[in-house]
Image (cartoon, rainbow, N blue to C red; front, side, top):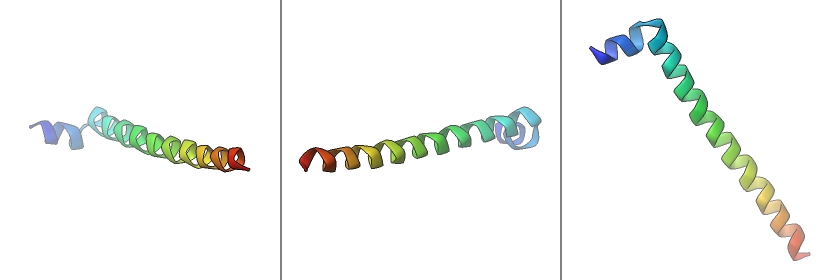
Length: 46
């Protein structure tokens, strides 16, 4: 029943989209911060 509501209703699909968006945004921020932290660490060693 829960999966039917999740995949079959507008609010369920919106919830899935929101969860996916938050996970993708977290991954982007993680990679962005890690990249810039590595660059700053390299500059500090020079």
